Image (cartoon, rainbow, N blue to C red; front, side, top):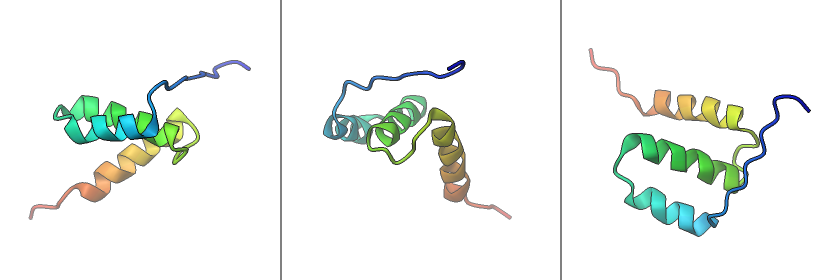
Length: 65
């Protein structure tokens, strides 16, 4: 099928969780978060992970008036 990407995540769920807790860099944290979601099947595709990440970012922001 055209455009299909197969990703093999070698780290275990617990390894990814530990890495997430330690990571301080925001960009690396986001990448690890997507890998964790894919590994735990919280999301089924990278696209749905991107949408979820945007929704999570939106809900975590505070409005300043």
